[in-house]
Image 1 (cartoon, rainbow, N blue to C red):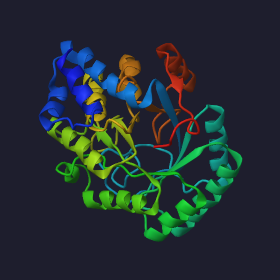
Image 2: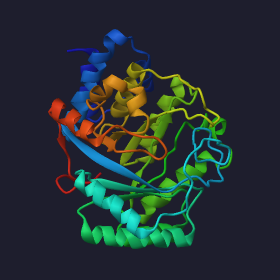
Image 3: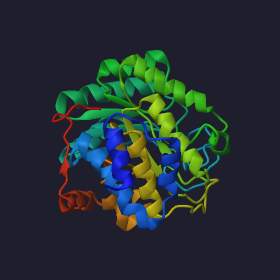
Image 4: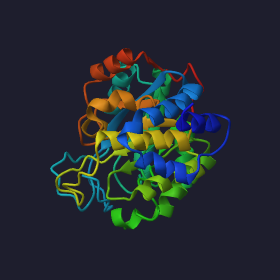
Length: 330
């Protein structure tokens, strides 16, 4: 039995992987990669079998954001030539839900740029969600920024199942990425969501000039936050943003990050998210031996690969789509 098989079995038995081993995963030589991936797959298979959750994003409000996040093409300091528009009307949001349903997606994600939503924007989302829940067999995730308690309660009452608010990076690295809000602001939003009874989704963006120790800190911070779903984004550096030209990632390192997240957060939904096509590239299928969730379709301001390619990838792997009503939604 290999070292990483032993570590995986100890994780399955309820023990926590040490920070030393967590950092070792990111630093292993490529010749050990398949060995540690096998360990991650043992954990993934124990909790999720070969099922994969599908998610789809609808960018319902683009640009016009006052924040100064260095990775984001929608921020106030970005000169990227993106589409900018205010909150889409309900019919367009419903059309997105129909598309998600046709693609066998389990979770439809309603995303809006900005520091946080206005009350009228929340009301618009609430109206759309009520209709979606009455018409489609979909889970709905909202991602609207920093929430107020009464707004969170409205979303819960409307039927929003999950709310996404990413930590994005480590507490230590946060001010290198944005100064218009604090790391604690992000933590507080996730804690509010948990108190409201909505499933919390919180993840990271890797490749923003952080250290490997920062990546380990991210994994353990998400464990402490007890997020049900962890989207792992890999920086797709966009021209016109402060991180323009940043290219620190390779497919093997991205795979190691996904493995790390599985070892540290064994029971959680680990989702390969933005940037997977340009960073994992031909190793995308291997990522699903550690992760158990992906986005299909496009992202916020960048294109994903054809959904038919994603479905073919799952079929080729022998994996199956995990519809939310077949297993516990967590």
